[in-house]
Image (cartoon, rainbow, N blue to C red; front, side):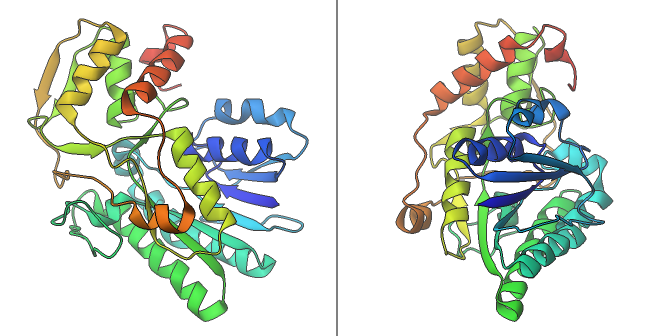
Amino acid sequence: MRVAVTGGGGFLGSHLCEALLRRGDAVVCLDDLSTGRPENIQSLRKYPAFEFIHTDVSVTADVPGPVDAVAHLASPASPPDYLRLPLQTLAVGSRGTENALELARRAGARFLMASTSEVYGDPLVHPQEESYWGNVNPVGPRSVYDEAKRYAEALSLAYHRTHGVDVGIVRIFNTYGPRMRPHDGRVVSSFIAQALGGEPLTIYGDGKQTRSFCYVSDLIRGLVAMLDSAETGPFNLGNPEEWTVADLAELVLDITGSDSEIQYRELPVDDPARRRPDIGRAGAYLHWHPEVPVAEGVRRTVEWFRGRSGDDTAEEW
C-alpha cells in the first residue's frame, strides 16, 4: 500500500511509518513538526519508499498520486503540549481531521482515526469499554484535547455514513517507549528522565490514581491490524494491566537504580482517577493483545534513554 501518515514525525507516528516501511509499504509522512521531531524520521529517509511533506494538516493535507490508506495521528498528545497549543489542538482535531478525511474520500482510501482514551474523561465506569460514553468536562483545560478527539470521531463516522469512506477508529490508552521526549509531561518518560538525571520524581496527587501502560511496539501492531481490517470500531488499544502512578515510580527507580526522591504535588484539574481498557473487542475482531510486560517495556525504554547523551536527558530534544 501507499499510506499517508499525518503526524508521522511524532512518537507514535514515526513508529507507524517505520513498521509500514519495513513490511514493504510506501509511506508519505505529513507533519509540521510542532511537537514531532526531525530525529524521529531521520532513519526512515534511507527508504526509497519514504516521502516527507512539511505541512500543517489543519491547513492542507494534499498528497500527489494514489493513496491506499490515510492514518490520522496528527495532534499534540501530552498535557503540556495541548495546554500550550490549545487552538492548534482544536484545529487539528476539527479542520485537520476533515482535511485528512477529504484526502481519503478523494483517493477511495481506508481512513484510520487515532483517537484516545481521553474521550472517556474521568470515567465513572471501570474498566472502560467502547460502549461507554464518557465523563468529559467540556469546558475544562483538558477539553481542548478531549473534545477535539470526540469531534474527530463524530466527523469520521459522518464521512463514513454520508460519503461511504472506509473508516476505522481506535482509542489509544497510555503508550510509552523509545522516541518519547523526556519532559513531554507523560508519566513514563517524565519519571525516567527525572530518575536518570538525579532529579526528584514528581507525582501529582497521592499517586493512587491508575493508568494502563502499553509498550509502543504492541500499540503499533494494533494500529497496523486496524489499518489492514475492514472494521469500523471504535476499538480500545491499550494494556489492561493496571498500575498506580506510585507503583510505576517505584518500578522506574528500581530499573534505573536511581536514588531520586519522590515529590508530591497538587493534582491537575480533571485528571482521571482510573484508566483501564476493556480490549475484548480488539481481541475478537483484530486478534490483538499486548505482549510486552510493563517491567520489560520500561527496561527497554530506560536503555533507549540511556543511549542518548547526558545532556539530552535534560532537554526537550
